[in-house]
Length: 265
Picture 1 (cartoon, rainbow, N blue to C red):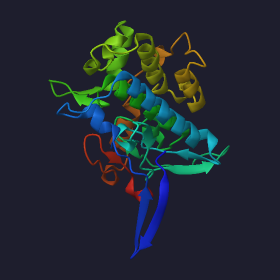
Picture 2: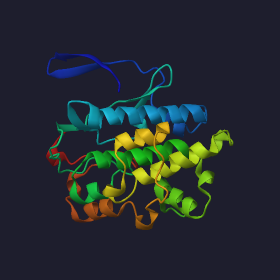
Picture 3: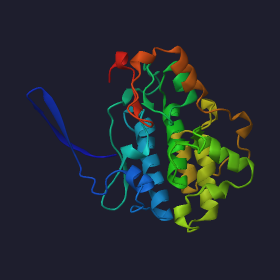
């Protein structure tokens, strides 16, 4: 996590002081249009493991449960040693271990929102894990969660990866900019883990502790991936947008953060 060093309240403004993250946002390295920023395979895996460790702390190891609610590449900041650290807790909510979260509004970023969150508006650790699964795929594939096809249709990254997995070509989804310089077995494992985390049924997703164990090689992924239940990942969100109070949901950009203004921050 990005370390909070202090704060200043002055003239009605609250200023927060954090550690300086000299390498900026991960998003810049994954999606730099000029191609000047790049990440090798080892750095990508290192960043994924660092973010997983941070989420494990938020979900299970602090005195309260913290739901981040906006996990995405642009909220992962890189220090001078390219360690990935979580920033932007503006949408985060916390509650006691063993109790139920009270959030009832859809917040987050389109492309990372779990289907059940789109339907109910209730954020849980498992909705964070869904977003983390999309984040894994984004880092490994070097693709945004949603992109436009040549025909103008939206293509979901997770659906594209599932298509390759079912066709036996999963390894072809790895970022082409790596030019094959990756560990094939590790790539297959991490891609499958991303799909498992982004499963449309929340009860099929692993916990953050299990995810860390999978990444560290302390536990093997299930032999049978529950892919027969995989469906359209945006179904829940689409349903919410069609039936919910659309006027209260601002979307800043194609991948902008959504927040229901009636619930505040």
